[in-house]
Each structure stands twice: as C-alpha cells, then as structure tokens.
Amino acid sequence: TALPGTHPLAAGLTSGSPLVRALRGDRPETLPVWFMRQAGRSLPEYRELRVGTAMLDACLDPALASEITLQPVRRHGVDAGIFFSDIVVPIKLAGVDVEIVPGRGPVLGSPIRSAADVDALGQLDPSALAPITEAVRRTVAELGSTPLIGFAGAPFTLAAYLVEGGPSKDHIRARTLMHADPETWSRLLAWAADVSGAFLRAQVLAGASAAQLFDSWVGSLSRADYLEHVAPHSDRALSHVADLGVPRIHFGVGSGEVLHDMTTLGGERVVVDGVGVDWRIPLDEAVRRVGTGVTVQGNIDPAMLSAPWQVLEDHVRDVVRCGGAARAHVVNLGHGVPPETDPAVITRVVELVHSLGSGRDAG
Ligand code: 1CP
Image (cartoon, rainbow, N blue to C red; front, side, top):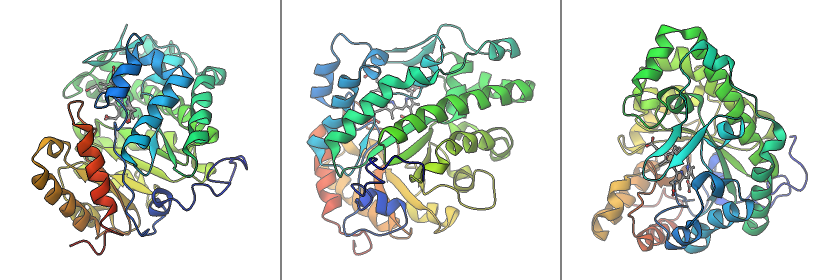
C-alpha cells in the first residue's frame, strides 16, 4: 500500500476496529454503527459553532471542520467519524461558483449545460486541498483507534447539481444532457470523477481509514443508463484510492434496481467492500441482490427516528436480524439524520445496537 507508515490504518490503530473488520468481511463481537449526517443540525453544539459562518467556509476552516466531525463521536459513542465537509467542496476548490444556501442545498452561479461550459471547467490544484488535509490530520489525531470515514460525491450526483444548478426532483436536465449529448456528458462526468477522486484521496492520505462514495441521486436512473453512462465514471472516482488499500463503501438512495451494479461498477467482480442500502428494501433482500461477497451498510428508516421508542426499537432489531444474512453488517440509516431528530434517540440506538452482539445472535 502507498499509505504513509504513520497512517492510523497502516500503523494498526484502526485495523482492528469493528468498522474496518466488518468492511473486510469479518463479524466483530459488536456490530459497528454510525449515521450518515451524524454531524450537523440535529446537534445543538453544532448549531452553536456554526453561528455566523457559512457552510462552505466552515468546511474550509480546519479547526472548525475537525471539531464538528468529533462532536457526534463524543456524544453518541458511534464506531466511526465521518469527515465534516460536503460533496460540492472539491468543485468549489476547482473554481466552480457554488454556494450552499441554508434550507436548500448547493446552488450554482451558472449551471454547466453545454460543451463550452464543460471546456471552461478548471482543474483542481492539489494545493487547494490543504485545508482538507489539515482538518483530517487534526481529526484522526483526536480519534485515536476510532476510524474516520472520508467521502466524496459520485460523478452522477455531482452532475445532478452541476447541470440543474441546484437541488431538483427528477434531475431531468441532467438526464437530458446524458441522452442529447453523450460526449459532453461523458467529459463532464470524467471531470467530476477526477475532482471527487482527488478530494477522496487527500482525505485517505491524511488519515481516513475508509472511503465512502455517495451517489445519492442514482435512483433517478434506469439500470441501462446507469451501466452505460454512469458506472464507468464512479469506477474512475473510486480508482483514485484503489492503491491505498482502505475499505471502500458505495452508497445510493433508491438504488434497489442497481444495487448489484453498484458493487461491481459494471464489471464481472465485486470491487467495493461495502454497499449502502436505503430503507426501501430489507437487508436480506439486498443480500439476495448483491450476494455475500460484500458487506452491507444500513438501513434504519430515518423517519423511524421520531417514532415512539418501542416502534423504533422493533425496527432496529429487525434491521439487525435481516443484516444477519450478509457476510458482515455496518448498521446505519437508509439516508441522513433528519435535522429535527432528538440526539438522545441517536445515542439510545447506538446503545441498543451495541447490546445486540455480532448481529447473528439477535432474534
Ligand atoms: O447549514 C447547514 O447546516 C447545511 C446543511 C448541510 C450539512 C450539515 C449540508 C448542505 N451539507 C452538510 C454536511 C454534509 N454533506 C456531510 C457531512 C456530515 C455528516 O454526514 O455527518 C456529508 C457526508 C454531506 C454529503 C452530501 N451533500 C450529500 C450526500 C449525502 C446525502 O445526504 O445524500 C449530498 C446530496 C449533499 C448536497 C447537500 N448539501 C447540503 C444539503 C442540504 C444537500 C442536499 C440538497 C438536496 O436535497 O439536493
């Protein structure tokens, strides 16, 4: 591996952690659990720190980004930190005019819709990633034996913002470009893959022990379009960390039709270590689709977090029972923590999962 000897995984600090073991296919004594969007608006300590600082400025302030990453780990006792940043940070660093509008999400100054727009995209200067590297270094120094997960946006999900110019429902303009001008589409996705890949690689080299690619909006694609126009670019993004030997997780929402393809990226073999599953299909069904050559991650329904405790507890036990069909299971939500979630509920879910042993004996 090309990891520096001081890296937490190479140095043996995180290699025996439940998260890393589970991603490598092992069943640790306790199931690992973490939550997508565990940092952020559900935490009062986050809201306090963020007062007066714009989202992307917070992402580029190493002390702030590191502290926000650590908050949910301290509070909930989760088995991993997820680096506090956003999928649009690297495209901003590559010169794209993008802001994160509170209550809305990423919004571009001018959407990318033509061949000329794609030609005008700049490259990501590696030195621009210095605040990311610094934030990750500080974070892993505090986390010790708890692994940090680095992440990036998959090319399709990034293109959904780049072409639409902001959040959208069915990504119709993006999918239109894909069919109307496949050559321009392919160049746009290759650009996004390399920018995201460089962002992911910087996090891993600076100390992240796992890497997750978020293809949040993959559910708006047909399987045929996914295989032809998207999967090769996701493969390209993940290839940026392939030589580093860290476990790689691939996650999407509404991904049932392409779940298997997300593990093989269109090839013959499983090429990722973990696949994230949303709340729409039970994990035993997910295992029927992906086989036992990959660890499953998920899939507590985020809507359950505000249900009465007994309803939530039964659901969590069921998720763990269904996850018993997989070679290994990383417990998570099917998508992010809703901002209105009571953080005490999250802590209680962590305690419950940790009381269920390896997951195989839960019944
Ligand atoms: O002011 C704020 O608090 C802004 C809210 C916020 C936060 C806390 C945004 C805007 N991004 C983030 C952080 C973030 N984004 C993290 C780290 C926190 C953690 O997971 O603990 C991560 C991993 C992301 C990744 C991200 N950003 C994704 C993929 C994951 C997912 O949730 O699907 C996506 C799609 C985005 C875009 C984005 N950024 C922010 C919002 C509200 C959105 C979604 C907008 C939309 O609906 O299209």
